[in-house]
Image (cartoon, rainbow, N blue to C red; front, side):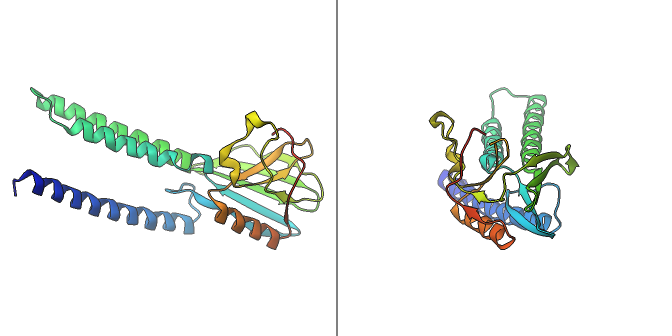
Length: 221
């Protein structure tokens, strides 16, 4: 049991079991949070469309697809630091060991809070398809920001031609995006994770009276 190869293999197996178990726990917890419309999520949820009646729809966006990998990268970076700091240092004292443990805990809490802060930004757009009036409100950990009002060009149509015409401003993350053109030629943009998510979102929009068309006049955002 003290053979280095046995120790390495046993550590790998234990680590794999922990990772699988942790992944399953995160998925179950995230599903529980989503069912209860919690103000924070562990993973980014896909945007949803609701019909509010009277030709009004609500578009809810849970997190930013551009930042989708950032929380996991932050937590991954924490674990790398934790592993590096776990190696013994010659001449270390119990106080020094406690200091290292405290620093690792602080790094973990900082990474966790930062990740949850990114996942807690939920934005809702209330869109009147008749008048083109849009009310936008974002929340962080359930605390609402000020409501902002916009006016869309009529008739209200969504588009997937959302890239700026200026080559220097084009964004690879907008390969999958849905947008609406405002009266002042700016855009309201929803960035999707992949083509499947984008198609489902646009299908839901069309079902509630807001079809997607292409091309749409493009101006600077």
